[in-house]
Length: 105
Image (cartoon, rainbow, N blue to C red; front, top):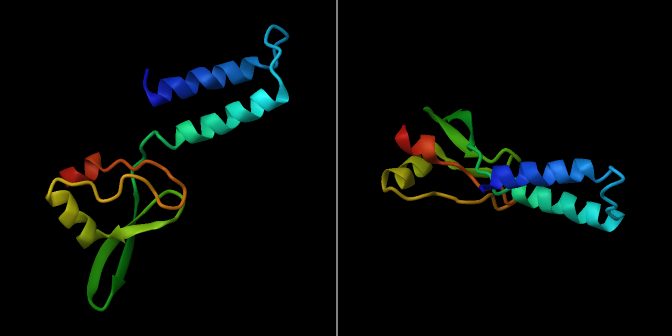
């Protein structure tokens, strides 16, 4: 089972918690909500690229979906060309980042 499947299973369980057959407490429901949020951060997402220009240069910067700046395109590309991963997780929100397609560019 991967993160996505685990999240879907927990969401189904949570949606069933209103059913009389599953007498979950409010505390359990809150814990499950927090667990789902944490698990969702483990599913990698692609960084957002935004165009920036200045002083005769034009390139894209990389950002997390939360808006946190990750790095400028030239720096990120140099790291990817070495076969390394620039940043695995966002420093602000903890979201796991997916660099798979970026390393193929």
